Amino acid sequence: GVASCDLEVIKTNTSAIKLYHNLGFQNVRELMCYNFAAGESTSRTVVEEATWDEVGGILDKYQDWNPSWQNRGVGLAQIQDELRCQTVILDDQIVGASVVIVPLRTLSQIVVDPVYRRKGIGSSLLKSAISQVPTVPLKLLNVDASDVGFLGFISRMTGETTLGQLEMRRTF
Image (cartoon, rainbow, N blue to C red; front, side, top):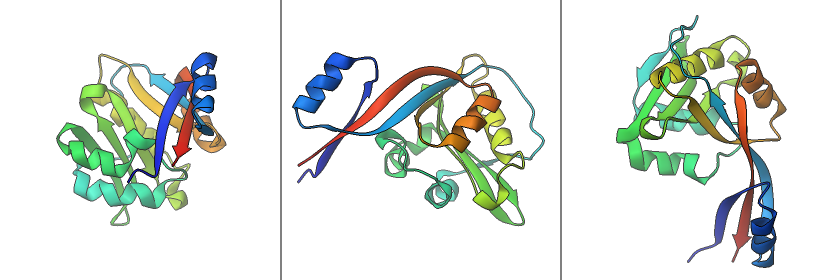
């Protein structure tokens, strides 16, 4: 059967938060949402097209936190035809990857091997993702607000905060 139910609620919607608490939901974590301005850009690192099969296993390996339910690999695998996956390969291995859900104009995941961080790989992947939807802002949804390093990266890349949410869970 069902073991738990997860949901997200906008932080300023205090009535809904109170209702969910009364229904037995508990706060799990704070999530932030961002927009990145539309436009074409170039990156200093070569970013290559990839398939879901190439990227899917790498995401979990390099994540610092679990994505929210709609950005998890199991869900993304179900919509492979709507994804645009990209990688950065150095020393014959994938050291960074990104996944964009093209119809939603959403960057679902972006990861970099910890050994290769702060070398421009994440910036190159993000710039490439932005250029995939050049006429509208690229959305990045449900970033774990406790990841100070990633929030700094988003700030340096001029991500605009659009929304704060709470992830809530009820266990049965």
